[in-house]
Image 1 (spheres, rainbow, N blue to C red):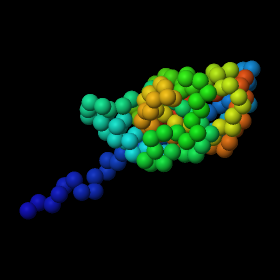
Image 2 (image 1 turned 90 degrees about the horizontal axis):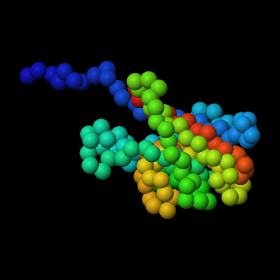
Image 3 (image 1 turned 180 degrees about the horizontal axis):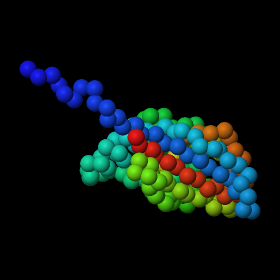
Image 4 (image 1 turned 30 degrees about the horizontal axis):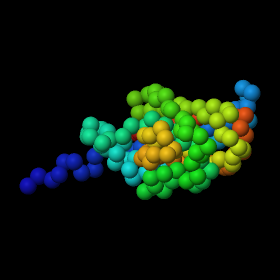
Length: 164
């Protein structure tokens, strides 16, 4: 009987997420997280990657980014701890692009004067739903050193999902 020829295959797939946020005031960067690695949730792997690859009904696509005051979402998280909900439009629509054959980037902006009071922010996440009043499914999220966000400041974000 022949041995399994698939054993020890050199093909490996890793999926990692990285984000970077910059706080801008009057066109100047006043805060920068640098690139930070994130946590992809279990539902992120299942409903976005696995089901999306299979074209299954109910699969999800990343459409929005969220900013919050809490901690990194755990592997089983379904919401972003401390998500900002000052107004209905707190979630930021993302613009997806591919950087190379193994990286997708989601760019987003939280405009100035959207938050109604100064906040101490420290987490970010990607989700499929626009409304803070309706639950969505978190794909991924991460945390960084706390930053003060004033009402006259904007956030420009980049979120990369790298495969390889």
